[in-house]
Image (cartoon, rainbow, N blue to C red; front, side, top):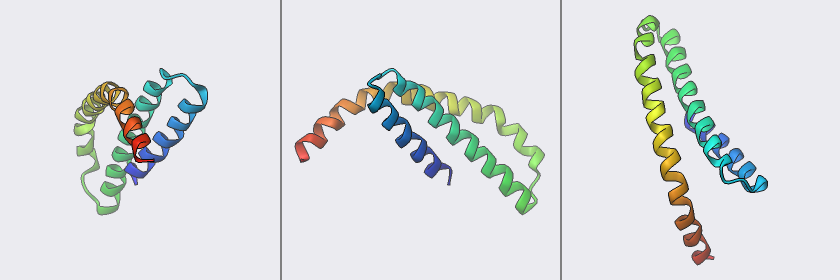
Length: 96
């Protein structure tokens, strides 16, 4: 479910970027989508912990590494997505 939520947020955000014509807004969409993914994944872990009766308090120990992981993913996505979009657009145009 978290990946589906990420895809929906990214698709809606990209649609907003296209309509607004502001490419800098793409970075905001990337940050929001990645944060939504992290929050949904963490919520799924907590929910699983409560349902399966795991030690949910132990999940607090992974909060900081998850935030660091999210920051690294955000940084990489903010660098790579703008670099990969133009070649992908050219490729799609060639296929039509």
